[in-house]
Image 1 (cartoon, rainbow, N blue to C red):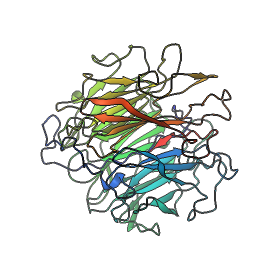
Image 2 (tube, one colour):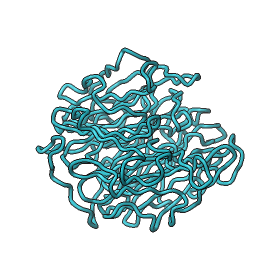
Image 3 (cartoon, rainbow, N blue to C red):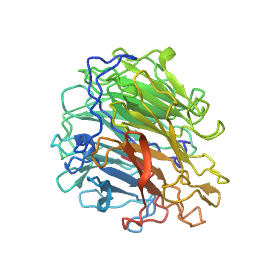
Length: 481
């Protein structure tokens, strides 16, 4: 299995297909998106019930379901004008009618999440992956939310969604990894389903994805976005490898009329986590990587020719002027992008799970880096921990575990005001239970977005007990989508 912080589980899949603008080009100013205002509608790709508000899916892959240990489930909280509703929710697992064979022991359903309108009906659909290669499920969106889950006739662990050939239909890349038991990479097979994809789980066309041949290649995360501004989604992939010095490599596949093709080798920032978003406002998605080993965030700016040369990239560390905390604090364990301030430029959320808070090791933190025309700097950066006023809970240590606040981060506008809100998890939050073997309920927090950045005012925290779902050892929040 992967040796990343997430208990050997790969990172969540994030969908980020951005519209192309004619001004796309690294460093050139582009047309800004409208500033935040009431009535801002969520994109179809984030809205399962079509009410105009982004919805949040939370994976709890270690949960016991119907007596099956580590069978897992997904909880979906729907957005509204008042934010997320823990009362208006849907819980999906392999006991939900439509899935095949019922809950399975150690299938870790919900370990991976991806979303997008696969069948073109105007509602986002949710693709649910597993950790062992035990199959994937699509839950279909509709006016009442997600329902009618369909088992995919394809083994898989994680996926990514985007219109890679530019025909107006979303496509689906399926990754199947048989995770090894020695913490080393064991290989991944990749299949591309070109849309539209029917509710019978049948694509229009299928093909394979060519991956590097110089190492055993185990995909841990895949995200989409339009890096070169040609109107087609591109795909960034992070994989564990059996070669190289970091143990991870990041690769970029560019969309084309014929589908995905691999970009020049290694011409992208490297890291153990990746997100795509327009953080300099030029209309091109930028490649943002988090490198937990090197404790840095690196931004490779998109351009009409793909990722700009490395000489134009930006590297952010704890030593960067404006970054809160101490130079020795943990940094860059997870990364997500979204427009928090509503200025038309995406911002970057960064998890720092092993940050010491007071005397508590591995308590964790999350930071917000402001996107700007011309590039990202440390100016006006923010940091939040469980000891930040207004954030529910407190930094705590449970046996030899900390909470790992910031383990998974996601930015999405759940109240439709034009400002992305931050969902942040600590799936190892033990809720006072000192036993590491049967604990780890997990908690998810929501911090509101404002023109000045994130705020802890009216912050929300919820876990499996809040929504009446299986709790003991669930690792609620290990994936967010």
